[in-house]
Image 1 (cartoon, rainbow, N blue to C red):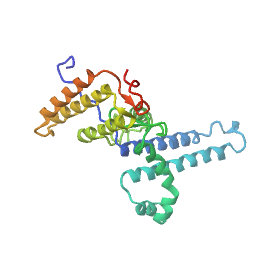
Image 2: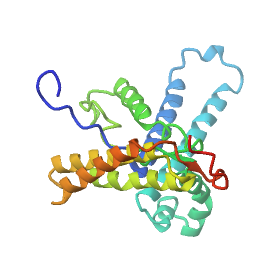
Image 3: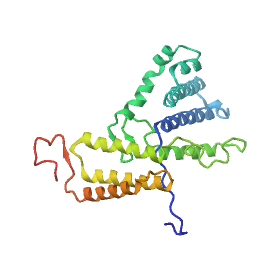
Image 4: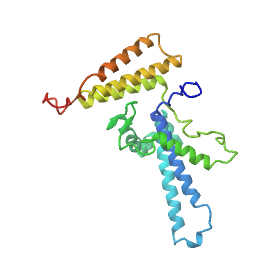
Length: 258
């Protein structure tokens, strides 16, 4: 309970992969805007070296091309067909659109589909995931601040405290419960006998989300029983000694149990 007697707000659910792709696109647009801002005022033109304005314009073009690539990634995450993307690009054929942008989409999807590791909440963690998608809460907050600092009173988002983070797609409670399964599946993939304490964390988080689902009025009738079983399982797992057994130690019963 908070000091005024009200219950604390539930933490936000993680962003979906579609939300992360939109964050990447927003970040790309920010970089275009910052590059363009630097070229608007001519006050220091007399100090520029020959070719500097061409270089600056080329940087802006490269950033615009980067934004186009992230726009295609976002469209694909939204379910847009290659036919529709090709039409928007020229029009060009779906084959040409696919040939031009498929590598970017595949590079984006690879660490999401098969990450180096998975966080407790089921989201991927992998050095191949680019910033800001690798640290989305912080990055979205920074984008909120940047956009507010560059907002005019007439802009449609002028009265929005969270013009970026408040509109990126997040998981709902049901889907958040589902993606926890990616974490438990990863525990099984990484260890012959998974770490019981990590399994306990997952069981407790699942019970937390089931309780949240109940507060939202969407829990099934069996929810209370499932929550009790989840808490009991977590308690039993926390009393289990050791930290699991790695696949490397499977041939040596004396290893991996400490």
